Length: 221
Figure 1 (cartoon, one colour):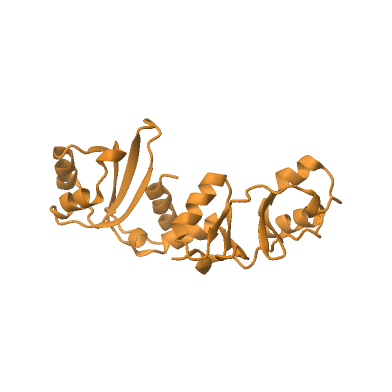
Figure 2 (cartoon, rainbow, N blue to C red):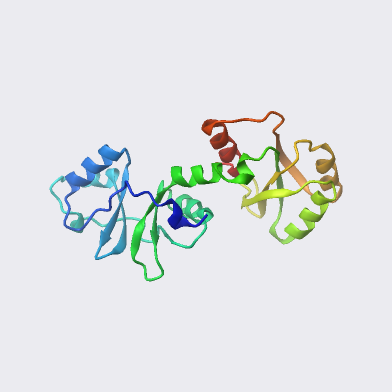
């Protein structure tokens, strides 16, 4: 699941010779509020409709506008995880993809990235989700996996995020292949792990909306 596999070829880059009014026209046509800016094959950042409206000059050339998010890109061989990480860091729904020489290759939208996760085996597989809170120094996937596998379950996916209730802790979200969590939760608690949430998937779901919903819940977005 490398970033270049999910480049959206329907989103055109703006050139320095384009005008602000053209950018707004393209944004309206493809229903987005942001477009990448490229000059001589190099990614120069992102321009939003809000920035253009603030300048209030539709005849202004793109070269006269200071783009935002110069670092809002990932290398083409990076995992789709990195696209979502960078999108979150820059608070945008679009991330540029470049090669190792920083040549612009295209963009991946957050929607495309989410769909990629929804199509992955770990998201589609029936199972359950556990959310643990712990100190980063206490985090050991080897130890946690050993405990869970001791209950005849396997970890399909894991995701680490900061704990909004305690800046010194992390949240570890685990997708498991079992729907019955009672024994697993009891064993984890016996080993000193604090469970803060869980989701049991007792009924198999189908359809894009259900899979997207499961993904967003899994990533805690």
